[in-house]
Image 1 (cartoon, rainbow, N blue to C red):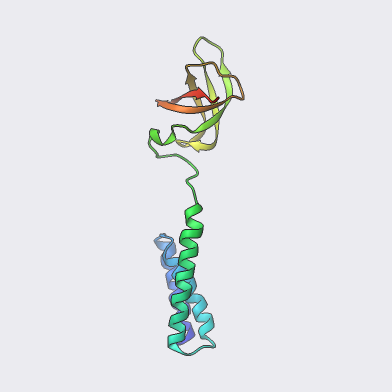
Image 2 (spheres, rainbow, N blue to C red):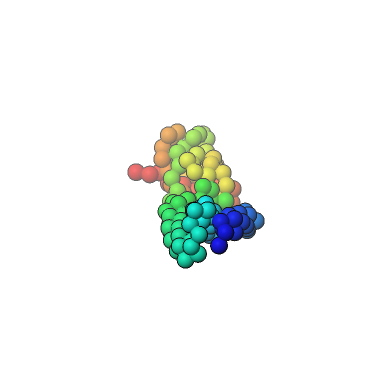
Amino acid sequence: MDYWWWLAAGAAMIVLEILAPSFVIIWFGIAAIITGIVAYWVMDLASQLGLFATLSAIFFAVGWFGILRHWKLKTGAGQSKEAVFGETGIVASVKAGDFPSGKVRFQVPVLGDDVWEFISDESLAVGDRCSIVDVLGSKLKVRKNV
């Protein structure tokens, strides 16, 4: 098979991945492009197909299990409130009053924001680490970490 067929197929697969992102097709597209480059010198179809199958398996395994597995959700936007229970933050400010309240800052955004108003059953000071125990409307209920 001529090398340009592999290059065209690889380019088509990459364009298809851009149009319908699934992070699956791209690995086969990259394998097809590399096979096309090698096919410029290797004219045997069986060797080309073997190279494509081998590269596809390697790229898919490395891409899917090596790269995508380590990507984590950077925000909790759209998650249920139970998904954020136990998230740890640092008290940024405390309001004076009988009922401990103030603002807490999280390193990773929780439910779409990294700073939230909080209420607590115990006294907290600026700089204390605390964990989410409940979501009460637009405020978080937290407890002090020991």
